[in-house]
Image 1 (cartoon, helix red, strand yellow):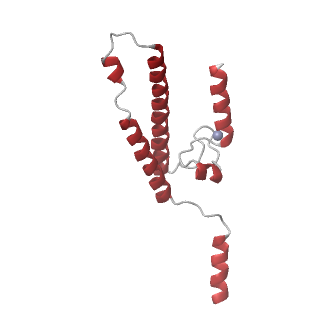
Image 2 (cartoon, protein in one colour):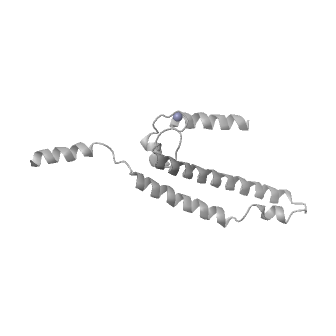
Image 3 (tube, protein in one colour):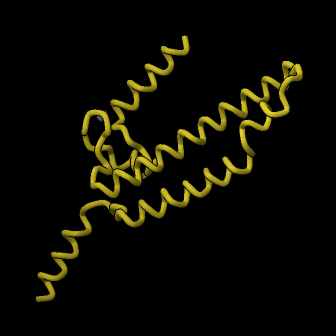
Length: 133
Ligand SMILES: [Zn+2]
């Protein structure tokens, strides 16, 4: 009897630990709160526009652009997290939203909000680099 029990436990232990849906949700939720806090702490974007009418110095404009870009990144991240939570809900989590292939476990461990498999992610990044040229 004991032997059978041990075998079962060993069999289960072969697979690397996989996060449960609840754990992933918690991770995403935690990051979402962090990103939201950061977004809020930067204040509304229209602040600059409301004081407008005046000429802005080049350096200020530059700063604003950096802030804009940072905000854009935060908002994009928030969307990614929300998407991941949606996929978690409808059971599509872990599959590439582009080609449907399984996203590597390592990749999900590094970024629980990853929505693309490594192949699609690379081609998206390549496209982004090309579009900036
Ligand atoms: Zn893919």
